Length: 153
Image 1 (cartoon, rainbow, N blue to C red):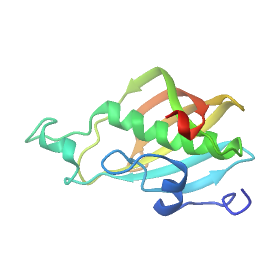
Image 2 (spheres, rainbow, N blue to C red):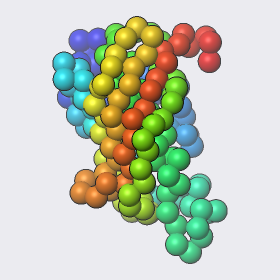
Image 3 (spheres, one colour):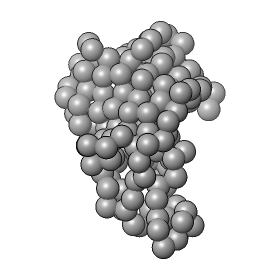
Image 4 (cartoon, rainbow, N blue to C red):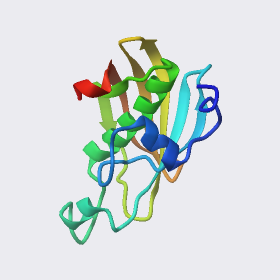
């Protein structure tokens, strides 16, 4: 873990942790990672080329809220995985207290913040916040994870 206990991760390092691939990998990079504090900040560049914009309000495209939650869950999953120093994968267990505040449009940058509430060998829980262009709240929620062996997925 010492090689991963650094301030940021590029997409190549993210895909070593997350099982997601295009079009479901929704984290482009990790900007900040502090395992001692249990915090992480990820980034998702939102482009008009995203497949979901073809059908999600054509003419006035906005990113589906459930995909913003998924991006938050992926970012939190990276944190839970690294915090527990394990070879398991963090799977989304539950979402609570989700609130959708501002739309996310093509050209926006999503900053995905997660702060650990609880970590254990079985999973974890984070307080998550997605900011549009790092200044407006898009989504806030609490996200729970279960850690499972990769061969159980």
